[in-house]
Length: 551
Picture 1 (cartoon, rainbow, N blue to C red):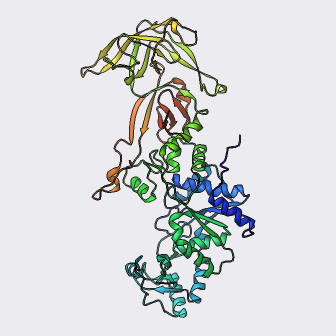
Picture 2: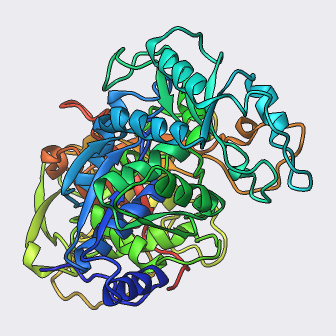
């Protein structure tokens, strides 16, 4: 069945329509251009969905391009993870490119600028260049090297490429306008020296283009028609257009900005996410608490739910923050008909049914998913000893507590009514065992109508149960006012991960990594691909069963 895609209009789509109608472009080419210096997160997913589906709607193409112009921060590990994430989300790129593929052409385009008197080699230090730029209220000041001759600049730039100078000793700067109200046009740096090995080009280069120079050239070289980026690049657009024009590029892309994605209780800074990994707070980039695509995948989110979320939030020009419950809503909706139902006890408390025959086991029928009858039935063992949740028994319950307590009767899901007549405590006063009787006339599915009970408990047969670990999650960082004397890491949520040991139904022995289930009364869970073994199942909580959130 084909997935429902968002058909509502948005301002970017309207721009594309007008450009095609006006003959500005023959077709549409978009691109997704991540820097391979970290793992993709949910914010990148929004850009992926936007670029690929916009091009698809207009029968265009989308390139996957790695903006790998900073060898000190980039790695093939990130390249491979990004490719995996894009494919997992359900998209195939038309072309795979690297910015480093164009280093030679970028160098030649920089030569064009020098020959036109539009770029010069500057010996100033990074701090001196920062000071020269001025402020929003004060114009910048010109470098004493700004008026070097074309011949001198050509010679120095070639020598920079030859490796004759140390890191930071010289840079190539554009010659634009040091008094421009747009600071990005105050002679920005185009090239810097970095004697670093590059993941794609090795040691061939020791000078590397800056992003603001490389990015527009990459778009123009590839024939990208609509270069879609987030709003923080709006002030860079005049420089983008300047580079394309002054470097005499044949194809002229159009940069369009939209508001980046912000989600409550979610860290969206790649730098901060890397800090959580490097400082050992996260169990790698795929930690289920991380908003990375690999983290969401390991937690149990589906690509369908992420795509639906990205379509629903749409694109806009103004900043806003999306409630995290909205993302949870879409995974619930996606799993509702897909996930098999089962029972798992997370905090087990043993129950002995004293009047049930010792050694007897009966196998009960239960629907795999009542909302999707085509999934059929499963068999559940039932015997004298079972586990229930600790919270489902209280010695002295408050009013309106309808679960198990002395002399109270409850229904066991898919099984019988049981009634508590005794319990055992340990030396610390904790209840460790419940004794009950059952009524054989009350078996589920027999149509028993003799009396009603208000509580229904889930359970697992103790003699057949399979041990399981349950990982319950809260946000890594909670949204709150941050004090000046504290750092980002001071706000890591100490309760972001809780590991509990319980039991699941025996039919779960066949569960494989990334299999998803709905545990009765608990929520949706995913079999963890990292820690699950033949001896022990590990489940990651994806999302609770219900939420107050409404679209």
